[in-house]
Image (cartoon, rainbow over all chains, first blue to last red):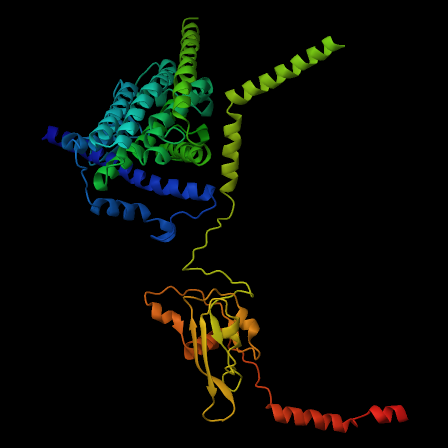
Length: 340
Length: 199
């Protein structure tokens, strides 16, 4: 009986987090289209609902009812599995993200503001984030199309090159908080805006932001799905629900890396000043995550796509040495501060 | 002299290189671009929500050609076919004839405007001696029935009523106007030429 209740609570929590994340993903597309339109002096979606507010729902319904096409010569099993392989790693990372401070107690059952507090949280997220690249590569390969294959190959190369500096940039906050758990990382940054790691680790923050954009295949690093070169990149041959899985995964990944950036560098749910405590921590978390997402979209509206050799040179010749140097300096300073 | 000049040159070169480095390290160019896009968030959108909100057309707008009426409801057209002669795309056909009610008065027995051929140049409007034609502001002519774009005089008159509700007064018949003119001249002692020299 007790076990059943525990399992039920966990399932409800997982369902709640998944639902909220997917809702945010849907409305992130609306947010993006509106901001892009504003920055290009357009109006964006205006027709469905008040100022196009129901547009994501209409889009979702449309994608749901579209014809599901499997191209001839495609490897059917891998072609079907690839979108799922992309979506699951994108959603699974939210399990360790702490959204707030206080646990909610309903009917004598405690609901915590995170699904689980893994003591290897950062590692877990990074591991699953790189698993997502397999889905992209397999999807591109199984489509039996040269454009999809090229997109998948580019994605694999890009993810490998930018994963290293991304992980190394996160080592800074890990060293400072002495923990891989995102919950402990957040609590270590308590006490106001000056305690956030962005001030101690500015280089790591910049490296993280750039690499996170490259990880999620967003502009200016959207070479795997470059419309003007590769039709649509790795999901050229996909349609209907399978395409929407890729789409959901891309936006879920965006939210996930924003959540990690918020936790690792911007203090998670901590308010910037102690007297701002009256605003609920969950709201602070959302504000920070959405500020980060806004920056993503802002950058998309500003910067054109890089050439592939530029992308590679930037990743290996600048990002990686910089991240290593940052790690060396940080670990040295931390060692001497802790032992002096 | 040349040595110091060279030193100055290397110094400016160093400064240029230094500022280049600073620009690269702090992403100055990208930040400038970000500033530009951010400013454009507050620029008013130039999008027209067309079917919902329609633009105000300028006064000289040349839409579909229409026929006009006088204030007593009779049509202005006298069937002279000058518009047909002026039309560069041959989209106007006029069949001239006598008015069955008033013999000797000429009207257009048939007037056909092929809007599918019309180039909206407005030459017919300028050619008309009695100002019977006008360019309306009708421009939403998309249709699934091409025949509805071949307009006869009745269709053009109804469109004219829609776009030009203010009608000009019918001028007095020619003979009466001429007579009235002579009468007025007589009243002013016409011809005056001999009298003026006498005086």
